[in-house]
Amino acid sequence: MPRAGKSYAATRNEDRGIGHHDNVSQLSPWLRRRLVTEEELLRSVLAQHTPQAAEKFVQEVFWRGYFKGYLEARPSLWREYRRTVLSLQQQLTHDQSLATDYAAATAGRTGIDCFDAWVAEVQVTGYLHNHARMWFASIWIFTLRLPWPLGAEFLYRHFLDADPASNTLSWRWVAGLHTVGKHYLARAANIEACTGGRFAPQGLQEHAAPLQERLAHPQRALPRLGNQPPAGPVVLLLTEEDLHPESLGLDRHQVRGIAGARVSRDAVGLPVSAQGEAFGEGALADAMARASEWFGQPAERLPALDGDAMAAWAERLGASVVVTACAPVGPVEEALSDAGNWLAMRKLRLMPLRRTYDARVWPHATKGFSAVRDQIPALIDALDLENRRPEQGRLDL
Ligand SMILES: Cc1cc2nc3c(=O)[nH]c(=O)nc-3n(C[C@H](O)[C@H](O)[C@H](O)COP(=O)(O)OP(=O)(O)OC[C@H]3O[C@@H](n4cnc5c(N)ncnc54)[C@H](O)[C@@H]3O)c2cc1C
Image (tube, rainbow, N blue to C red; front, top):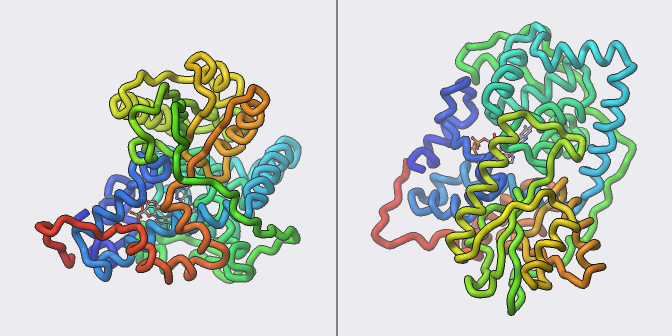
């Protein structure tokens, strides 16, 4: 927290290499699953720094909500991306040239020093610095000339913070598909400067044109969801999309049972690294233990995130309403949508709750990030994120 102010603003673009990323928070695996919520993080930061000093860090945190809201308004971007990954994976089985280039890139055998090092880093740690992710995606697309969805899938599979919105939309942004015609080209001089001279990449394509696509992805109205739990008894379902049940607004006495369930990423065609799997398991177990203590009920693990398992559990506990935190567009949301239909046939109700934070941020995420950025002071006020304790002095670091 002390380094989230001016120090972060001054150094955040430096990729200092494996084991030395202490100029950035490395909090994304926890934020992505809401083991730590954005509100919690922003409150801590704004308790220590003035909004001016923390401006850059605060903006970065809002990028997460921006991408979430954008994908929520255009779910076809995710569905189309998934379809393309599956068809490219098929292509890899018979297109020898694509298969050879893809194998060299994902084994870190391209001869481009930084790229090969980032392949190794993400495989060992599950993390890459934001700048490295941008350069990685740019080199994948414009220098190696590989299809961007395969690169996005490769990183998704290895990141501990793998996130449908941030990953897919960041790749599209680098390619020039998010802000149409505006792409991100990795430059050797910039990489050398921001990595402290650790790399001197050769042969980067620094003048490529942005990618184009024919499909349009129309914006939909955000699905209407409440943020208030119903009165009366409920059971609480925890998924990896939101593991902060204490702040969902549920009354301790109304929760009759707690369960946790995960979508196996293998099941949706996204095989995940062993450490990603272990992190997801640990995250869910942690939230189940906290929820059990908070609500004074045992927490059990469902065998799968599906309607059958959820219905059997709710019926056994005599509950007709299953409350869960809203899952934004992605594999969990897809599983919950199927499960909700199944539960309805059994006269049970699945009730996702949208957090106030999301309800406030997402409506601004329809075009570029600037619309969210311009709202940050109002959002900080509306969400009451600056209610620091008076005795806490604020740093201007
Ligand atoms: C090609 C590409 C793929 C990406 N894939 C993912 C992904 O799968 N999951 C993921 O969580 N982030 C992804 N990002 C966004 C960003 O790189 C990471 O969130 C960030 O690097 C995490 O490191 P940190 O926690 O140290 O960030 P810090 O610099 O400490 O930032 C604080 C927090 O702000 C948020 N944040 C910062 N930068 C961004 C950003 N550009 N977009 C969205 N949120 C941001 C994160 O929650 C982060 O934890 C991707 C970016 C690119 C360019």
